[in-house]
Image 1 (cartoon, rainbow, N blue to C red):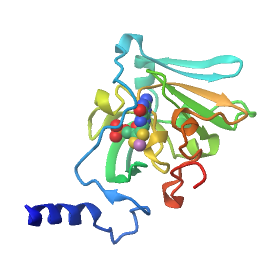
Image 2: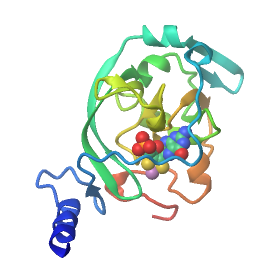
Image 3: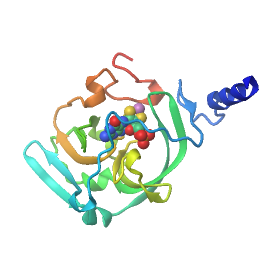
Image 4: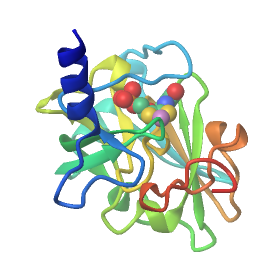
Amino acid sequence: MSVLSRGFRRGRSQERSDGRLPPGQYDAGDGFPVLSAGPTPSTPLDRWDLTVHDETGERHRWSWEEFRVLPREAVSVDIHCVTTWSKFDTRWEGVSLDTLLQDAPTTARFVLAGSDGGYTTNLPLDDVTGGRAWVVDTYDGRPLAPEHGGPARLLVPHLYFWKSAKWVRRLTLLPHDRPGFWETFGYHNHGDPWLEQRYSGD
Ligand SMILES: Nc1nc2c(c(=O)[nH]1)N[C@H]1C(S)=C(S)[C@@H](COP(=O)(O)O)O[C@H]1N2
Ligand SMILES: [Mo]
């Protein structure tokens, strides 16, 4: 028993030699924890849409069929949850935010992602453009599971994973920053895992 649990702990806390484990994180290995602040919503695909808003109203809307034929990218990235697990080489497919936001108004400097169920999270536009963020609908070659944000979630792997809003439906472009759900409850406004920006004040 003690041998097993010691082996397990050593596995969990193992340092990577390649410098890909941010400070204070452990490698979750094959595990993929589910972290949701509420129940898993279920929106039928024929009622699903993704919209881009600014303060003057809706600028774009894609139905599921329209979203599915946008130019797609496959990405393999490491993800880092503020609760200290990291997962390496996760494989996703979806649409780059560069594609979704390509004619964003020049006044926009922030985006507030909004999800089915009411979750929100805020990001600087600079963090979600330049090939660093996607709306993904495929994980490891299969449709994204509902508990992991299916049919589609935001993926912003260079920030803590709470910024990757599951069940995303709306991207609101803003000239000024507006804190989202966890940011209002004390999480760091930016959330860079390499700087350990876990909580406000870090
Ligand atoms: N809509 C929504 N998105 C969310 C969350 C949530 O509660 N609701 N939790 C966030 C947090 S804290 C993390 S760590 C990841 C967890 O994603 P996973 O459940 O696929 O591991 O989703 C993020 N996106
Ligand atoms: Mo998290």
